[in-house]
Image (cartoon, rainbow, N blue to C red; front, top):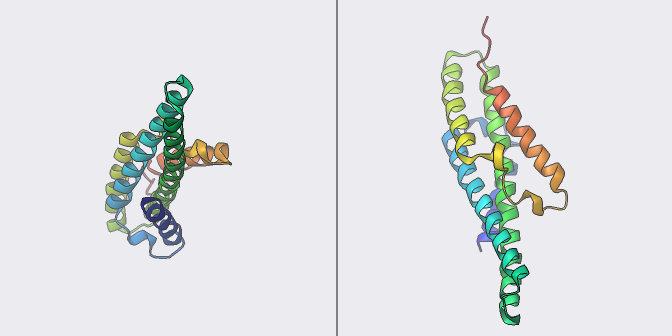
Length: 166
């Protein structure tokens, strides 16, 4: 059920970024989701590595190997879904930053500063720039997905620079 729930969340996030109402989403909620999903994906990636090490170590008997293989398949599917949700949340965060930065309204400037602080804290806490999203390496097109995620984070950092107001 959790894998299906994550797939639904990912689809909803994907649809949301295509609507004109994506700017109305709370930046705090985007950041919370991004941090939590990134943390889970990173933890799943560590667990996958531990299970693979356990299998390679030869300590498991045959029925344990079957259990470990089932766990690996489940973890891979779950981890990929969490990683894809992080990617969608990164894009939503970048979209919000860009919309607010382009607006000249005084309330948008205040909101931009608020969103910038939240996004910066989220990126710092999740350490996506340093250790990656987690589980993206499990995708067939992993190198492109990893590069895309890092490019989005880099763009977010660039957009967080204060806007020049003349």
